[in-house]
Image (tube, rainbow, N blue to C red; front, side, top):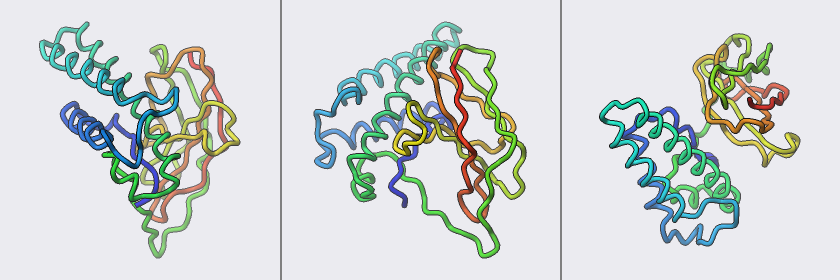
Length: 214
């Protein structure tokens, strides 16, 4: 396992998301490896539990298929997801690359890269560009199809993109031609980079691009 927590919650259905978050909250409660209080602006466990309760209540309310209640569920899940991603970044720093400690958080860890005998490292994808989505707070990332890429990794940063610690995993995509990101903060500047994942493992990152979210 790698000392990197998996935060791709967008790939989970509602039931799996609830189970995963519940496991994370239980695992972090009274965890001696990551004692509270956590420094601001890292969300505390109390705030995480409150956000989780709000999301679960919104989920049950949305079962009536009311459009407004569905939107409230989506918003509550996004708020909780953003908080969990923030906490994950903090936990990775505190763990100092100790996978045993990170394993106790309840988050999944990224699997080790297995390089194929004939699989070389993929070059950086070409044609990287970013456009604004139809909804406020959304962006669409594009790269040209990369031969040998089975999927694409997207990293996101705010602040100085030359500082590696500012970069965080945003999403994975089976295609690089239309990668939709939602729930971003309008008016904020974000940096993005993309790499292909092939049989030889993780490829080379594109040069980062910045964009102001509308």
